[in-house]
Length: 60
Image 1 (cartoon, rainbow, N blue to C red):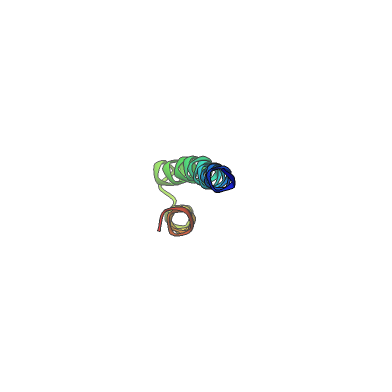
Image 2: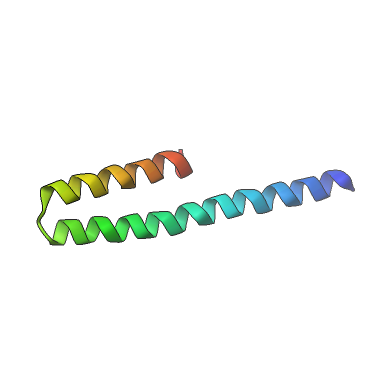
């Protein structure tokens, strides 16, 4: 029974980690979109770098 509880808690932690990643990815994606629309290559490069960091941290 403790094993099932441990699995449940572990699953909740994974889900929270991925939800945090999704929220951060949404904010970063919004920044990336704004940078591209503004046609500012420096802001676009910074936003793309931030986007890749989110992908690397949460989804690889």
